[in-house]
Length: 393
View 1 (cartoon, one colour):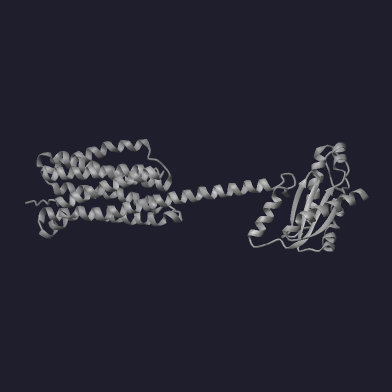
View 2 (view 1 turned 180 degrees about the vertical axis):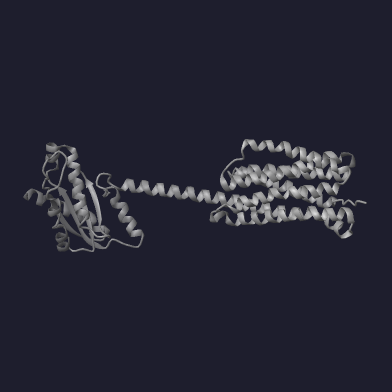
């Protein structure tokens, strides 16, 4: 003699309402979070909700038992498959292949076969179903187990893996219980199975909770990545706007900005020497050998000046053939001594268009400054000193 259990009406309704709410949450999240995995999970939760309605119809309306069980079985298989598909999309960024749609045919045949058992032995239907159905949860678990989750999604992914393993164990343990309950009719087993929908709902809610955490974490990770890319792009643009492309020195536009940055980051400009350096006879060099030779001369001058500076000093191309060098915390004799080697660095400079190296020369002028307020006045003095040296030959 076979004994059949009847699930709790309250348990089925609570589980159905719970899955509907989870489906609604997925749909709402999908509207705000651009995560493709949510599309599969949303449809999956809706399929599970419909599946539970089929089980309700099959349980409490005997005349519709076959159709109700068929809806129940197909809905749960679709739910399980879409959980797997969503996990693959989430972990691998891959959409299910179109060939996977052919799986619906054998699944339908299997579901029809199981649903036909409902008039003879409904417990056998559940026992066979709960042997196959957990494989889908285990498959989704394996997908996530191989996923190297970013830190923002680790917690959500871990919760999903725990929920998927619990659902695998949960559904697998039903098979022997259904078999025993069928032929032994133990009241304790029947009572346990009556409230099975509530046990399932606990693990399903845990799974949904993990999904929400995972997709919000993924979105946060993507936003942080985009913001970091934008920040790097902005820094590159700022650097380009402050840098002379030919000599790779700071440009005139950077003068006020760089000094302002130094003041803000706790390194105020106190005192030092400002030097104005002008390459002599650049026009004659351009006329004789071409502009490529002039560019090479300017690059050589910038390289020579760069070899005279320390980490706290600032080098600007002020315009044309003129450079400005700020030597921080330096005296004028010290500045003149450091730039005295410049002539040696410019001697025998190779330039395009000339068969022999060219000896370059640069005029220099120096002035002391004491803080940002005196910079402009010091710059004018250094410029006048440079022109006096240039006129003196």
